[in-house]
Length: 124
Image 1 (cartoon, one colour):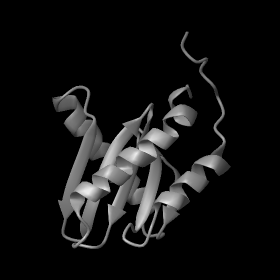
Image 2 (image 1 turned 180 degrees about the vertical axis):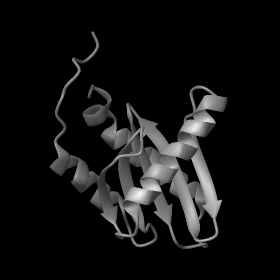
Image 3 (image 1 turned 45 degrees about the horizontal axis):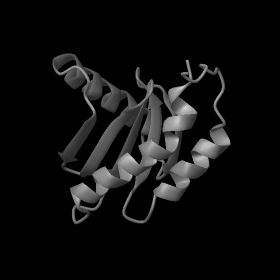
């Protein structure tokens, strides 16, 4: 039997998970809605609301082209980003270090998504 949808999330627990995964080489981890509304963040505080809105737009554009998008990796001028979906939410982790392996960033995003899957997937 599927879990009952819930209206509430224990944001303190979610915040602790984000903080634990945001290490030295990871500048920040953001959790935002599919529409780009920033819900919580850990790490550097630099334009998170803009980053979440941009990442939601990019995610939604790719998802429109290929239904069922699972993961998105971006290498930009100022760092690397990994984005994935957990239920109706998106997790974005970014590193300012160009030496940080993109495969390791992907592994960290997948790990944090698996930790947040249970508390976030049943939210309606």
